[in-house]
Structure formats: C-alpha cells, structure tokens
Length: 418
Image (cartoon, rainbow, N blue to C red; front, side, top):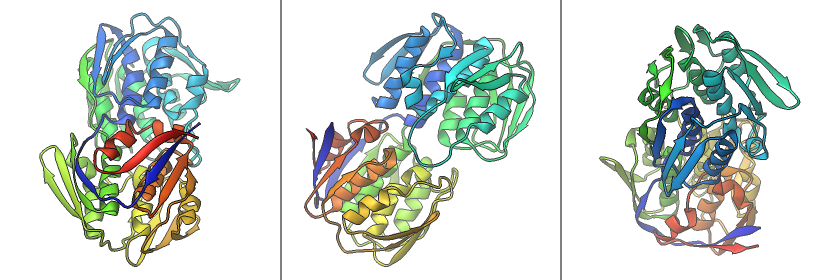
C-alpha cells in the first residue's frame, strides 16, 4: 500500500499541462466498440487506472488495443463476445457504457453491475428506461445487466432526471437504431458533447449535444476514425483551486476556458485573479480569500466533482461559507478528514456550513473517494507541517502523475510505501 507525503506551506508557481478528460475517455473508449470496421486512433487519452481498466475489459472482449503514451489505437473488428463480466467491470462505474455500445452494435449485451466511488445512490433506471424504449428487453440476472433486442427502433425519450450516464449510454444505442431518436432533458456536460462528436466522426448523425434536446438519426454502421479527447475540466479546476489555496501564480495549459466558467466565477468572487488567454488560464492568489456560497449543479453550474477541493479552499477563507451538494447525497465524507487537520465544518444532510480558519495542520488522512483524494492533496499543500494520505488507488483513478505535476509547480510531495 502506498501513501503520499506532503510538506505543506509552499506557494505554487509555473505552468501545468492538463491531460485528456477522464469522464470523456471512459465513455469514448467503449463507444469505439461500435465501429464494425476500421481502426480508432485516439489521442489525449489520460494515463489513469480507470482508463487502463476499460482497456483491459476491451481486450477481454477481443478488441486489439495498442497504447503509446496518450495515444491509443483500437481495432474492434476482432471483438468476439458481448459478455463483460470480469472483476475489472465490477471495479468502475463507467463500465455501464459497455451496455449501450454492445447493444447498439450487436443487439445484445451482458455486463456486470458497475462499481466506482461510493458517493451516493446512483441507479441505472434511466439507462434501462431508454434501452427499453428503443425496443430492448432488459433484465438483471445474477448480478449482471442483460439487454437484448431483435431490432432497435428510434423513439422519443424523456429522462426523468438529468443524467450524464444515461444520456451517453442511450445515445450510444440509438446511434445504430432504425429511424430517429429524440432525447429530452438530456445532460449538457462537455463530455456528452465530446462523445457525440466522436460518434459523428465515426459516421453517426447526432445533433443538439450540449443542449437539453439531442436528435439522433440512426445509421447502418460506424467506422474507425482519428479523434482527440477534450481536456479535463475537473483536473484543471483542481489546479486552479490548489493555486488559490496555496497562493502564487500558475498558468494552466491545454484547456477550454468556457468549460471552467463556473469555477472561474467563484474564485474571482473569493478575491482570486483569473486571466484567460486562448487555451490557457492563469490563476494568481495572495492567499487572502473571502468565503462564498456554492451550490453544485449540472453543467454549466458548479461541478459536483470539484465540490470537495472547493470545500478545502473555503475552509481557509475568511468568514462563513455554505456548500449545497445538490447532486450526490454522500459527498461530504472528506469532511471528517479535514476536521483532523483543523477545519471547522458542520454537515447537515446536503449542506456544509464552513467557518474559515487561519491555518490547517498536517495530519494522517485517507482518500475516501476520487475527488476527496484530490481535496486531501489540496489540504496537505496548504497545511502547516506534514500530511500523509493513504488509499491512493482512488486518486490514481482520475489524476495522471499528480505528484509530479504539483512538484513541477514548487510543491513537495513524494509517494512512499506505507
């Protein structure tokens, strides 16, 4: 078991390059399964454990996969099974995209119920509703989702709640359905748009991604293509928040500033200077921070995946701040770890009331989930003394080379055997 050891109290200076988006990559890789001919040449694929897990699953399905740094080449003509029931499938949430991809191409799929971080109830009822509306028979059998259809027929589908996973998954299946499908109350996140753009690059006919109505005209087949995944807005936001907390000046490169507008707005409200310049953002902070209120919302609102690092920032800001977590009901598990470091936070249901303190102190803490792990790193960077973080497998799911990137900015982080 490994741990991160962080010597806190250092300003951050320099520039950092953002990797490809985790949430886009773990959907685009399964989506490539739908190419029945040709090779998918994918670039800007982050080197994280969730991506490596998906690639392992695809090899198990029979795909030919080659990787060279952030480039992945996949030939899906060799897929020989629609049964995805390995330990890798059970380990990650995004494995449910295999259902839509396999159902779309082969009209059948058997996929183990997905895993992932424990941050609240995350049912797949909207996924199933969509598949059934397209004409599939879906059942849960021995812990696996089994979906089968003689034909998939386009239809109108209204999602009861805004769900990124359901929007992408049903979009995958509908791409190869007969006729036209309209998805209403669809999620608008950047990675939804990225998946739609990737499918269109393979020959799909999808319009409206990025709005709450997506129109899909089914096509007969998809072919391989060249495609580059968008930058990771959550990784970028994490470095923005860390710079605001530690003080200093950091340029965050290879980003799409529009994807970060909600984070930029909150940081500026707190007294942080944010300068946009093409595909980069520079964050300047003198450490004098004002408390603000934050409510997580679907895109373009403040992302739930940055709530936990933001909580750390607010814990050292002047005054009282309130965080309203409106997406997941169990996403304050990191608060108990922050209290070990001296934070003053009270949680009641989905609200956290934060009274800013002058300093956090180093402590031994755990990463309770992926984004909580990022929050603990930010806390360790800003704290007096030494912080030790365990359960690093959570962090490695979504942040490539995180200690190396922070160290290049002047942080002092090392990975050790625990």
